[in-house]
Length: 338
Image 1 (cartoon, rainbow, N blue to C red):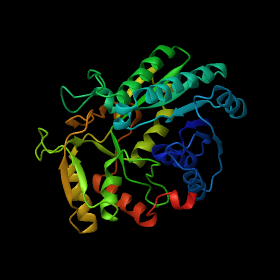
Image 2: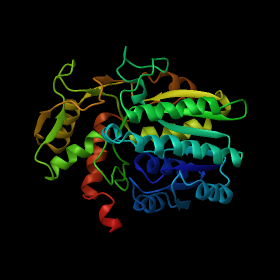
Image 3: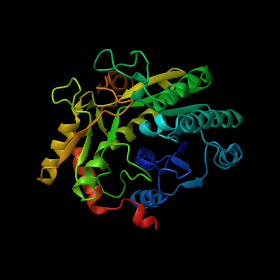
């Protein structure tokens, strides 16, 4: 089966690429490398000993995208490509809408042109906003608090309208990905300010920052810090493989939460990291960030029932793998790319 990965050089994309290649799929990757490195793809080739095509293009470039479809003729698309910074989306909303929404529309148009009728979309738990109840199931109201979340919800709506008896969309709403591949060969490396918690902690541990900035110590939680459902990126990657295997058993449009069903506060994650390195990590409290919610925890029962998928790796597994990645790659992919 031929699978096209948009944004396949990124954090989640590269880990999903490993899982697909390891299970024998024929894969093509496109990425504009705005927030990723081509080095990650070189490492995937070395890790899996498998080959795949790569095109350095932007999904907003219809002509270039059509050329890829002409050459590769994908049967399924896994759509990761998109900007993902909540903070940046608040400061530059149009940038996110143009890239995430217009880019997705362009992708769907080319898919129609080449009769590619199945897509797995990388969505986000941010579409729920402040939860009315926990854990959050797929029937929870949708009320994103920031432009990033709005852009994801808009694409979900477009996909709902696009889907029909012969076109299928599988929406995966991620909670908070963390961790790295157990080999330490690939992991999270951003071209810009990190979007996830562990890279910020690692910056303190490595001495690049004096202390961790904890945004908000006054939330209505046991220790005053925000609570999230942290899912190991390898578990998340495997959910995409299960999704494409399950198109024959799902409807034209299905939505699934991808999380562990367990919440951990910022200070709990910090404590887990301190346990791994056997050293206390300094931190200070700062004001809450605009667009952040108090608590977000998944109810993953639907994906477990329909895909037989569930998270197997723990918070401690994620922290250990992240530390392993950082020790082996102090500068991420940047040093190799220079």
